[in-house]
Length: 387
Ligand SMILES: NC(=O)c1ccc[n+]([C@@H]2O[C@H](COP(=O)([O-])OP(=O)(O)OC[C@H]3O[C@@H](n4cnc5c(N)ncnc54)[C@H](O)[C@@H]3O)[C@@H](O)[C@H]2O)c1
Ligand SMILES: [Fe+2]
Image (cartoon, rainbow, N blue to C red; front, side, top):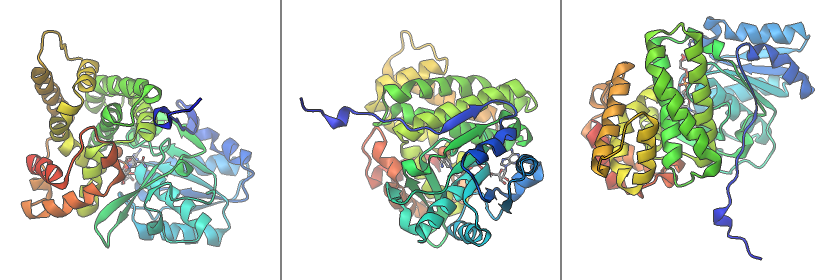
């Protein structure tokens, strides 16, 4: 009997511990890897918020040696990965705990890759480029957005080329993800909005991706429902821990979906934009979302109809074109309600930048699973709409 391998689907995920207080169990998980010394990777903002101290307390309670690396900026850079890998070697570490948003977690993945291979991080751009086992990774996300703690992506910024590049591999799925909604309580409204919209984009792009399937769809739809329902109330009342938990759950489900179904043009274009202007990742996605939906809609009408219904739009009696308009309008209003009304031009993008931005977006792996095949001119037109 022959098997058509194009019909096969795989699903990867870390061991996940979800719930308030999960971060305090970090030393127990470190122990299971027999760690000699732990490298904690974080950034100054997360350090100031106090979350790194909780990791240190947990490790000290069990007399586990550690070193702390916080030289990571938003949109983590190649040099930061290389510095972190050098520090990891100097300190004789053998397990990595990443605590923070997507930036420290991606930098931690990069440190693991570089220390295992002894080569520059730039050499690992692309899909399945990792051929040596990397050190155990235990992650604690402090934003409810990127889900780098469950994903097989690492996104690093190359400031020589002014572009962010993707490393996609099962090897960068962490071993353990301690998802603790309490860590998101110190995010301000803008960060909560940017990261929440990033998670929503993950879920929508995963659901309409050409890599979508039965193993990812339920996570994507649950994520859309949870984020759509709770993100505006959360930004209005950032202290509501129940809402924080719902958005964290939505983010995790979006992460499981996109890690396995991959993403689409919003992320391809957003990586290009974020590398070019060093803007917050969620903001880049927000500025592009409805314009990419507009471009993609005709190639995935049935799927977008389900997205619209999941966001509470009553599609009965509506034509395809009316559903599309209602969905785009809903997305614009949702973004406005969380304070994200920015346009590309005001962020520093000019018409003459668009060919370069587009050619870089065309090289991003996320463009491959976009539901509508796109050429460079298509991508340019979408950037122009978003100006
Ligand atoms: N690997 C993946 O699967 C994946 C997916 C999407 C995005 N990303 C990447 O993740 C990065 C963005 O990550 P992000 O949006 O989580 O933000 P971030 O990690 O860049 O953090 C942004 C700022 O928020 C601060 N911060 C983080 N958590 C905080 C908290 N709980 N309280 C107070 N301040 C806090 C940080 O100190 C930092 O100054 C981008 O580089 C993006 O490309 C990766
Ligand atoms: Fe993202």
